[in-house]
Amino acid sequence: GIPSYSTSPTAVNWDSLPTTRISGITYTSVAVAKVPANRVYLGSADGRVFRLDNANTGNPTAVDLSTGKGLPTQAYINCIAIDPANGDRAMIVFTNYGVQSLFYTENAGMMWTPVGGNLEENPTTGTGGGPSIRWASILPPGGRTTFFVGTSAGLYSTTNLNGTSTVWTQEGSSTIGNLPIDMIDVRTSDGYIAVATHGGGVFSAIISFQVTVYPGDANNDGIVDVRDILPIGRFYGLSGPARSGASTTWGAQTLTSAWNPPDAGFADCDGNGVVDSNDVVALVQNWKAIRGQGVPTGADYIAAADEILRALDTQPSSSVSHSMINAINEFVRHGTNTPSVFSMEQNYPNPFNPTTNFGITMPPGIASATLTVFDITGRVVWQSHLSGLSPGRHTTSWNGRTIDGTPAASGMYLYRLAAGGRVAVKRMVLLK
Image 1 (cartoon, rainbow, N blue to C red):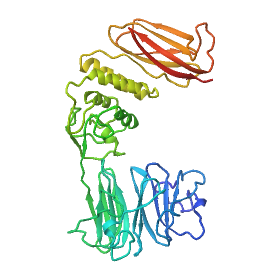
Image 2 (tube, rainbow, N blue to C red; image 1 turned 90 degrees about the vertical axis):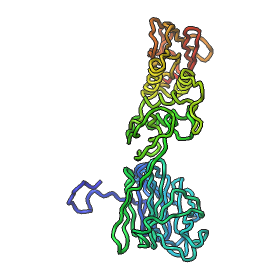
Image 3 (cartoon, rainbow, N blue to C red; image 1 turned 135 degrees about the vertical axis):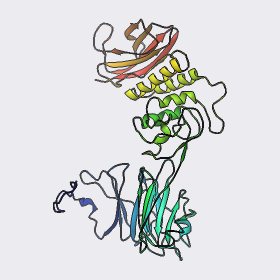
Image 4 (cartoon, helix red, strand yellow; image 1 turned 45 degrees about the horizontal axis):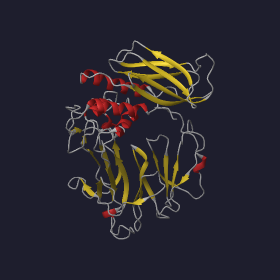
């Protein structure tokens, strides 16, 4: 790229994108996505739209996003706005009169929906006396996305795109008024928006917002269940704004600053500003809680922990899943004065060659266990007798050799943990 503060001629450090040299095309708008990185949208003076993926390497293909997609032809694209949180979502602005002015996509331009709504006198055709639209920006603070458009008659916004029935509301009617808007820029970290007008200077504001978070409802679907494990794993390690007065007690809590990406704010179940293993404890505490109804009467932490651990056991073994399992066991053992539950994790690595590891969790009162590996015919390939096990998590390993010491063949194997009358069985693959 071009070095910061460089005084070198502009011919230095630029890369050419030869696939964008299309006969007859004059580009009038360019926008770069943040997520995914290196995605570029291009708009032209004749209504053509293109997308480049992985534009930072090689010669990326210019994907045609306009032909046969219902967009106006021979119309001028003045602006492309991309959702900072999701590069599949974008809005294009046509400045011409007599055509529909605003189109939106949620699938990276494979399909476009007109969203001019009440800004068009005739929303289904774009004809009539509506204002010309000059610019658009998308601001996704917290869990709410706000769309802004600058027109020849002021600034408008909406939080609900509804095709040709979209309702746009004027912003700053007593300050910006009907000044023509030439450009809009936004800052996702704090909801800041700046608006450049024609003849009236620049206006700015902080778009205040608040998002309601329920501890444990990590995917924000209104109920705490196994589906809430995935967002914690997905956003694990991310940090963002903490919630004021946060706790893991079930109930509505307010997040007043944006996470990046926004959905990560729901995965921070304990509200301390970091998505980590402690957030999964809120799932145990609020298991099966439903918005508007609360935590079920007589909630059983042990049953909840057992169900979550079994769900984690089905996932590929990783440091993240191990941390979650340890956090749950610590909570069960200390937070409820109840011992650990019995569980066996998926082996890791898997597939493996020649050594793999097993994570097991033992409750009090059971100090020994037998780990057995079988081939697909049921023949015992290897066995280990574990003793002196304290309550909690332990690891053991298999070196890929049979009982007689010879290397086991490639293929699928079953492994079984038996302890105190309890049994857990999983599959694994030895791949040479």
